[in-house]
Image (cartoon, rainbow, N blue to C red):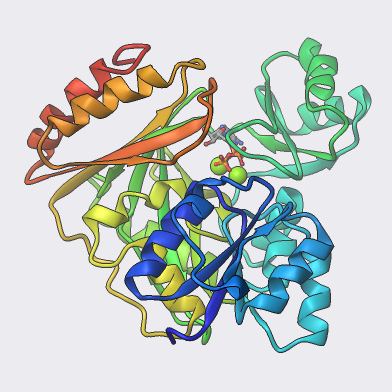
Length: 389
Ligand code: ATP
Ligand code: MG
Ligand code: MG
């Protein structure tokens, strides 16, 4: 196992945390990323020239091939990769690619992903394809109602491919702001909570789910993740895990998947979207679970036994450190509060510049009870540049 070299497409924070988990298992990792000081590359010093990182973009076919020649298993920290290139490599080499290029192909286009989930009879809200014209989006409004969520099919993250249309007069602006990308429309889901489940899938198709978490978003970006989910409905977590596991069973290839879901007032659960990789809602697993999502991703893609997904603390929360401006000192101020708070782990991603809306790091807090957790979280929220909102 230790001899197998893993190549990761993308070297951001998820790649960095994968690399950190790999170092504990002495698994060698090579990163493909265009930044020569990318977060994941910073913590991996190649000990031999054969393990040197590749400088290039994860959409660049030649660079992906260069990485493929150096490794035994290819995986990714982002789904927006050049999937045609992965399919070609799959065709001519015995290299393992996890999850499978077919899975990435299905998931990286959100409309195709929805069609796949619908065909598998999984619970998703109504959606429909639209053209980038006012008439076509108006037809979706007529059918699905207002508000309407207009989404880019591809290259979406942190809500940056979404436009919530609240009034039909906003349709031209919505199309313009999504900038000529292929679009589709989703019915507005009046959720009371957003929840998520990480699922790990072995190469043989065995699945294991992590506890259900509650995710709280601010400005479309994940802000807080509480684990485990608290609910008066005892069956809720079981149902959410089953839905997430059933969804992940429909894909091929190994690795962890993040299943984002909406919880409606009547306790119905609908899948929002699935990420074929470690996920922000699973960062908490590093401190709060017996095996982190990162280690389980590696175990899965290396055909090692999967680790326990159980919580090892009664209560936990993850706070994302999102850039508020270009000032790194705002992030450092929260770090200092966290360092003075018991039960707290600080993760800084090593990004060279702080920018508004950029994920700079996160803090995980664990506690013996929910009350203790809230008490530990409070000073952190108050230290955020925009207060405790
Ligand atoms: P991520 O960073 O999670 O990949 P993304 O850019 O892919 O984000 P989505 O997950 O599709 O975007 O949407 C971002 C957020 O917008 C969701 O977490 C949810 O709060 C809200 N949202 C998305 N779709 C809907 C919908 N159909 N109805 C209501 N709210 C929605
Ligand atoms: Mg997404
Ligand atoms: Mg999402």
